[in-house]
Picture (tube, protein in one colour):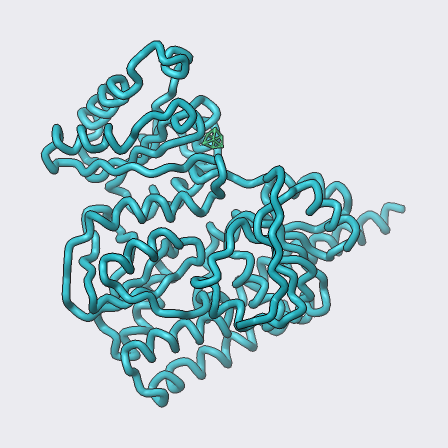
Length: 418
Ligand code: SF4
């Protein structure tokens, strides 16, 4: 285990809430609908984050809790059931309905699981209704996906077939490429969770080997494990190192011969390293500070340090699951400072004191830092971008080099005006 310095911090936080993950989940499963049970603020967040016009019939919406509901003057459970029945009448193509809890629904203790249960009885299997919380109270935005997937695990059928299960949403093209590589290794039974259609849930059982594609799926991994699946210990498929070790871990779990693994990986590694080189030249020796938001911070630090030569000053992470993150921590040296949790004011003080070349942070903090002359990268962009796998390693490096190039350009421009 790495000797990385692990610290904890609590205090005011500055992160997106779990509702944000609906943006990528509704694209992944076009036959599902995400109904947020929340306030007008929740509706604005999801509407502006997804950038979809109302008339485009999006696959998400908000059942707005009015003052009467919040004051306990109406039976919000009954009203919600009515809203759902109307929605399903109007949108017969919906196969899975996610009832997504929010801060307001949690505060008034709306029991979404009870509503889901009643609706499932009434709908008799024509639509499956599940619930999870996307509330911003004590959660960060990627946990929305963890909650949604965890809610689906009990619906997955049983199977004793040997298979590799990739868990976590990936861009379809990236996922196709990774599956092709596994097939070339002789691992032919590869399934994905979440699936591309919500009703095509993969079956699981004791011969299912789970390979996590994202580091923020703690609860989902625990539930899959409770259903008998084995979780393969591996770093995450970001960069050449992480992606190769990730594939190697799967290859070992399926007894693939080393010689075949090397034959497939070596040309990919050579090509990716050459593609990273120009970005490494820009990034090497630059100081980076990661504020906690996406839970991708530790694998990104490993990539940026080990493959791009960056100097991580501090690595914030909203939560640290030492079990899931073990293989990542093993790849980091002892002088890395990892801070779990957040006291945003103290962290910003440390940013100003340390003067990093690049800060990875939420959108709300990026503009003020840019105004102070500090280059930033939005953490949410990393969740929306196709960055997984060896083939994407150079694109991942480019995402971090881009703000530095922009910073140089702006500075040169200012000099030429002076
Ligand atoms: S769930 Fe909470 S944090 Fe998220 S938009 Fe609604 S009120 Fe805001």
